[in-house]
Length: 211
Ligand code: SAH
Image (tube, rainbow, N blue to C red; front, side, top):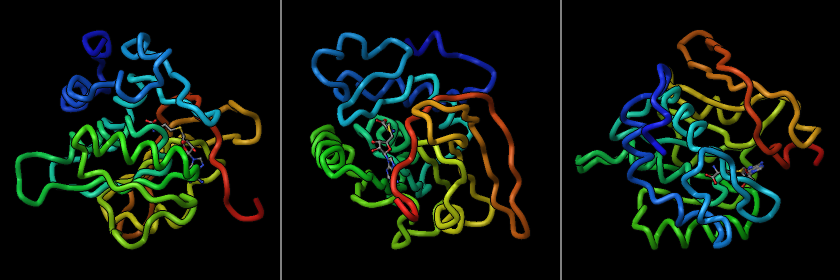
């Protein structure tokens, strides 16, 4: 599977991480046979795990390095978090961590169990609304959302250090799969740079004010 994903925008370290994480451990029994196809799969609670090519692209845009601390919004089954954990781990004593916020308590509990069974101790899962980020472990070197939102939550951007990056699907979260663009923000000392990285499809972000 990984050999088919090579592309200009994909970082070789992200491909290595994809090779290392056992995707079949993250998808429910009847879909495990499709775990190495490059497509999204259902993970319960009406949610989906992203296609591996999308995970690889997001990791590449995030450009994390060993030792980095990363904020994830939308743990889902924990697959993307495990891939990110591979990228921040390295051999160093000060290995980085992945701090992941999940809205659905059942998905969060299942992901926490699965990640600890597979030895991903660097991933920390909290139940909550990602619109607030996870301030206790800020500032982060990078942050990403795995659910689509019309606007990237201010708290998430605020919790990323200067020079850090935020990657998120941005777009219509009203329809189940509205028109969404993958956006990368680079947080500067005096301003935020914004780039568009093409069309994507993610489940809508839940919660937020007035929900
Ligand atoms: N990265 C995941 C895919 C997650 S699908 C994986 O590898 O499996 C999107 C996830 O975002 C779902 O689990 C959904 O419950 C979660 N989500 C939706 N709105 C959220 C919010 N406001 N805060 C945190 N998580 C949210």
